[in-house]
Amino acid sequence: MSLSRRALLSAAVLAAPAPAFAQWPFGLGRRGGRAPRAGRADYAGPPLRQQLGDWQFDQIRTAVSARLQPVIRDAIEDRFIQGVTATPGVEAATAALAEPGGAVWTQSWTRDGTAPAAQFAWDGLDRAYVATAAAQMVEGGALTLDAEIARWAPDLPNAAWITLEDLLAHTSGLPDLTAPEPQAALFQPGAAMRLSPANDALLAQVLTAAADAPMSDLLAQRIATRRDLGETIFTAGEPVAVNASALDVVRFWRDLLGDRLHGGEMTRRRFYRLHPVGEELADYVGLGVRVRDLAAEAGAPADTWLYAGEPNAASIVAYSMTTRATVAVTLKGSGAADALARSLLDVVVA
Image (cartoon, rainbow, N blue to C red; front, side, top):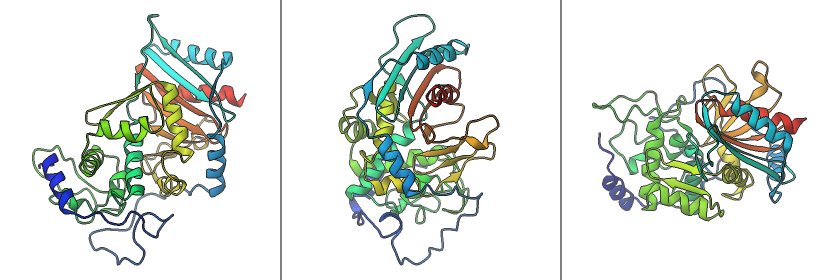
């Protein structure tokens, strides 16, 4: 099954863009009064997470709006060094932690004592950056969340019913697009949520077709340049690679939550419908963002994270609702970045 850039660009030229904003919810999303579509289905999966309240978004925006000022935090530094040295598979690591008042600590480390790299790889965070670019393009009128992907890839299963929002939320039901033979849809659009590289790949192709630019250039212009993230580099690939300092990753996440990368309505929209991921953790997915209720986990503190990354993976950036601090950790080698991030946040609690 071919998803060539030429075909996508041709379809994009032929299709006139729809209006940037609709009436629901938060002024974004599906058009008000639109008749139900036969090719879609109501969500039938496990219960969605309770929505975050406006007061919580107001509190978050206040916490991430203070100007950052570098500081030395011996207690955080000691915890960081203890954590990485005690994990045998970690070859190098970097971390940053910004407190609600604006104090920010950062440090890098290598096991062999060599100078750390200026930028580290942040595997798994690409979804947050790509979704941010998509949100900006929706706000700017180049795309709409309810645009059907048939405009770009009409031959895919259920293309007439899958929307841009489905790709962002992983509710498309798309099968493996790399299989040698065409595959049937996994489920009707909207009926369930399943994290899939197929959604990421098609979303990237739609965005690059609409912008007529490579994803690395698109992200550099819309995120790194816009917010002066001089230590962030995007490298072409599938998915696009994010290489950055821990401080830049913290700044990116604070900018996203603080409505400096897109408007407040869009920030709320990205956290509006939170689909559960699996059954082991209280972990939920929005539009390129995630929410994790740590209190539901054995031995975990009563905290909720708004984060990007994967549980037990090498990279994470998270905002803690309890401490109102933002932490970013990435590890080179083996190890769980979220465990170290939790340990660093414990120092802030103390």
